[in-house]
Length: 86
Image 1 (cartoon, rainbow, N blue to C red):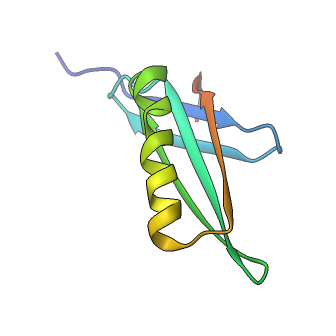
Image 2 (image 1 turned 120 degrees about the vertical axis):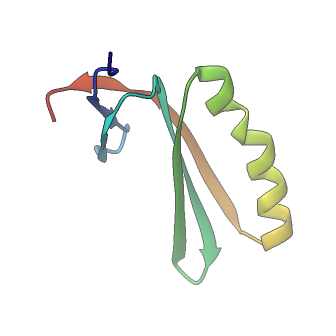
């Protein structure tokens, strides 16, 4: 039997809404990195994870990436995904 496909939505504190799907993968959390490059420029990286622990684990890698790439600073956020109707 095929797995049920569903849509998942993340709402970040700044009001940004990201919907992924349809997917049968049991994602539970969405993460976003906003890298401040200098001169008012930013770059955004994002992804989804199957657990809060997996998503939060990106923080250490982000710190290393910031050093390697010379980012002025970065914002790292993790929010829970909510199943929606799409």
